[in-house]
Length: 225
Image (cartoon, rainbow, N blue to C red; front, side):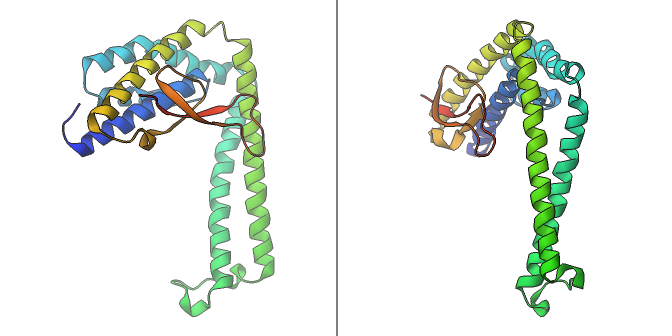
């Protein structure tokens, strides 16, 4: 690994991101495979290049199969993307409404039109924000349920590939543990949220969701050694 402290930190962060991305692939979550390829390339050694080559086909197969085979999933994913954008816009509107109503006009950095003032604007902002948020949560939950159902019905189809990805993840965990130990870093700085448990990682907390309870928990983990 590179000698400078800042570079070491970047390498450790990159290892964490690789682990998270590959774990998401094993859980049939859509991750840009180019991001994963670049993550291995950044490591700058033949060992990591070989790791990527050993699972590249499996990653491609898992990433693209659910999208083409699950009925209605592409439409739901486009809807989720639109709702994320809408939620961002409504949040900006909410901030502007709050600024217009809580601060005197002369103290604002820019003048705001009257449309942002008054309780009607405030109620509209609240309604739009809550509606966008609930709609996004509902669509996201529907997508997750469809993917989980697909995973349960096709676990055998991808079992060998997922096992190869698991093997690479555990090799990355070993590299992460070595890097943390060599740099003297606190393992708590490198927490990850994963769908599955792996050798070399210690579960410090399980998450099942606050509103929509997850059938399977997410695991908050750190390196165990």
